[in-house]
Length: 164
Image (cartoon, rainbow, N blue to C red; front, top):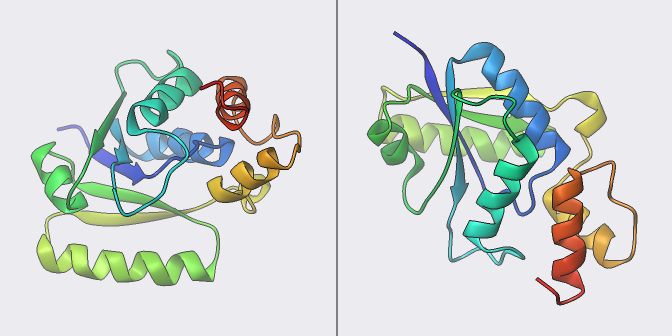
């Protein structure tokens, strides 16, 4: 039996921190579904389809056969169960992330005790990265090429210049 996990998030945009977590998740699980959340309550810069495209381009063929990229709207535990995943993996940067993720874990455990939550700390070089900070820095003209993949950097620049 192979172990399957999901890694849900907004990924607006996906950063090198996200990609680093993907590589580490694949050290623990045989198959990973990266799930782009389609939450109409969140104001995103990119559409769900654009975020999926950025993840696909950023990951390339390196993990072909082990990664699937999908999107969803609804309860994460329901999505995990529908895909046969046994774990939801979340990245943590600090105590505030833990508090929020702990609360989500508790409600997820209440809704479905068969789905485990796995928390991975961000690698030290990505500890400060948040998608919102990347977008803000880019909007102010900062060089973000060491925070996101080249494809994502081009997409951000195009989106911010109005040439999506």
